[in-house]
Image (cartoon, rainbow, N blue to C red):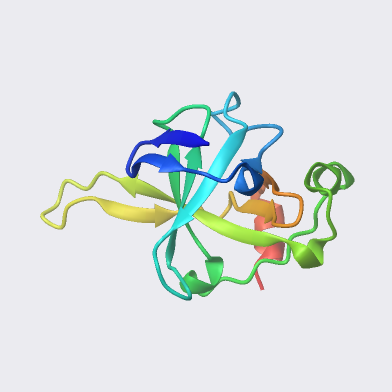
Length: 141
Protein backbone atom coordinates (compact mmCIF):
# COMPACT_ATOMS: atom_id res chain seq x y z
CA UNK A 1 0.00 0.00 0.00
CA UNK A 2 1.39 3.43 -0.96
CA UNK A 3 0.97 6.33 1.46
CA UNK A 4 1.91 10.00 1.29
CA UNK A 5 3.90 11.42 4.20
CA UNK A 6 4.83 14.94 5.20
CA UNK A 7 8.55 14.33 5.66
CA UNK A 8 9.33 11.06 3.89
CA UNK A 9 7.50 11.43 0.57
CA UNK A 10 5.56 8.48 -0.79
CA UNK A 11 6.24 5.26 1.11
CA UNK A 12 5.31 1.63 0.58
CA UNK A 13 3.66 0.34 3.77
CA UNK A 14 2.70 -3.20 4.70
CA UNK A 15 -0.98 -3.01 5.77
CA UNK A 16 -0.13 -5.42 8.62
CA UNK A 17 2.04 -2.70 10.23
CA UNK A 18 -0.64 0.01 10.38
CA UNK A 19 -1.56 1.21 13.87
CA UNK A 20 -5.20 1.97 14.71
CA UNK A 21 -6.17 4.68 17.20
CA UNK A 22 -9.96 4.18 17.65
CA UNK A 23 -10.42 7.62 19.24
CA UNK A 24 -7.80 9.39 17.13
CA UNK A 25 -5.53 11.83 18.97
CA UNK A 26 -6.64 14.97 20.84
CA UNK A 27 -7.14 17.65 18.21
CA UNK A 28 -6.89 15.02 15.45
CA UNK A 29 -9.95 12.90 16.21
CA UNK A 30 -10.52 12.12 12.50
CA UNK A 31 -7.07 10.50 12.21
CA UNK A 32 -7.34 6.83 13.14
CA UNK A 33 -4.73 5.03 11.03
CA UNK A 34 -1.03 5.63 11.61
CA UNK A 35 2.34 4.27 10.61
CA UNK A 36 5.30 4.45 12.98
CA UNK A 37 8.60 5.40 11.30
CA UNK A 38 11.96 5.69 13.02
CA UNK A 39 15.62 6.34 12.41
CA UNK A 40 17.84 3.49 11.27
CA UNK A 41 19.70 1.61 13.98
CA UNK A 42 19.19 -0.74 16.90
CA UNK A 43 17.76 1.78 19.37
CA UNK A 44 16.36 4.78 17.51
CA UNK A 45 15.83 7.98 19.47
CA UNK A 46 13.14 9.73 17.42
CA UNK A 47 9.99 7.96 16.18
CA UNK A 48 7.50 9.56 13.80
CA UNK A 49 3.80 8.76 14.10
CA UNK A 50 2.50 9.50 10.60
CA UNK A 51 -1.25 9.70 10.01
CA UNK A 52 -2.50 7.80 6.98
CA UNK A 53 -5.75 9.79 7.09
CA UNK A 54 -4.04 13.21 6.89
CA UNK A 55 -0.55 13.31 5.32
CA UNK A 56 0.18 16.63 7.09
CA UNK A 57 -0.37 15.10 10.55
CA UNK A 58 2.91 13.65 11.82
CA UNK A 59 4.10 13.58 15.42
CA UNK A 60 7.66 13.22 16.75
CA UNK A 61 7.99 10.92 19.74
CA UNK A 62 10.67 9.40 21.97
CA UNK A 63 10.91 6.49 24.35
CA UNK A 64 10.51 8.07 27.82
CA UNK A 65 13.67 6.33 29.02
CA UNK A 66 15.69 8.73 26.82
CA UNK A 67 14.35 11.49 29.08
CA UNK A 68 15.05 9.57 32.29
CA UNK A 69 11.34 8.80 32.77
CA UNK A 70 9.73 5.53 33.75
CA UNK A 71 5.93 5.44 33.52
CA UNK A 72 3.75 3.16 35.60
CA UNK A 73 0.38 3.78 33.99
CA UNK A 74 -2.75 2.59 35.74
CA UNK A 75 -5.02 2.04 32.73
CA UNK A 76 -8.76 2.25 33.15
CA UNK A 77 -10.93 -0.68 32.07
CA UNK A 78 -11.99 1.32 29.00
CA UNK A 79 -8.37 2.10 28.04
CA UNK A 80 -7.38 -1.55 28.46
CA UNK A 81 -10.35 -2.59 26.32
CA UNK A 82 -9.43 -0.12 23.56
CA UNK A 83 -5.84 -1.42 23.53
CA UNK A 84 -6.93 -5.07 23.89
CA UNK A 85 -3.96 -5.86 26.10
CA UNK A 86 -2.50 -6.34 29.51
CA UNK A 87 -0.16 -3.59 30.64
CA UNK A 88 2.96 -5.78 30.35
CA UNK A 89 2.88 -5.82 26.56
CA UNK A 90 2.54 -2.07 25.94
CA UNK A 91 4.92 0.49 24.42
CA UNK A 92 4.92 4.02 25.80
CA UNK A 93 6.13 7.11 23.93
CA UNK A 94 6.34 10.82 24.76
CA UNK A 95 5.38 13.30 22.05
CA UNK A 96 7.66 16.23 21.34
CA UNK A 97 6.39 19.74 20.70
CA UNK A 98 8.30 22.59 19.12
CA UNK A 99 8.30 25.78 21.17
CA UNK A 100 9.07 29.01 19.39
CA UNK A 101 11.91 30.80 21.12
CA UNK A 102 12.61 34.48 20.56
CA UNK A 103 16.22 34.10 21.67
CA UNK A 104 19.25 33.35 19.52
CA UNK A 105 19.10 29.62 20.24
CA UNK A 106 16.19 29.10 17.86
CA UNK A 107 13.18 26.88 18.53
CA UNK A 108 13.22 24.55 21.52
CA UNK A 109 11.66 21.12 21.81
CA UNK A 110 9.49 20.29 24.80
CA UNK A 111 8.37 16.76 25.74
CA UNK A 112 4.66 16.40 26.49
CA UNK A 113 5.23 14.12 29.46
CA UNK A 114 1.66 14.38 30.80
CA UNK A 115 0.27 13.08 27.47
CA UNK A 116 1.95 9.72 26.78
CA UNK A 117 1.08 7.66 23.72
CA UNK A 118 0.46 3.99 24.52
CA UNK A 119 0.62 1.30 21.82
CA UNK A 120 -0.12 -2.41 21.99
CA UNK A 121 2.32 -3.88 19.42
CA UNK A 122 0.43 -7.20 19.27
CA UNK A 123 -2.95 -5.71 18.31
CA UNK A 124 -1.48 -2.55 16.72
CA UNK A 125 -3.94 -0.37 18.66
CA UNK A 126 -3.06 2.86 20.38
CA UNK A 127 -4.32 5.70 22.55
CA UNK A 128 -2.99 8.97 23.89
CA UNK A 129 -3.54 9.48 27.60
CA UNK A 130 -4.20 12.90 29.09
CA UNK A 131 -3.01 12.68 32.66
CA UNK A 132 -4.41 15.05 35.26
CA UNK A 133 -1.80 16.71 37.45
CA UNK A 134 -2.62 14.56 40.49
CA UNK A 135 -2.43 11.39 38.35
CA UNK A 136 0.77 12.55 36.69
CA UNK A 137 2.62 12.88 39.99
CA UNK A 138 1.95 9.22 40.79
CA UNK A 139 2.70 7.53 37.42
CA UNK A 140 6.33 8.59 37.06
CA UNK A 141 8.67 6.38 39.07
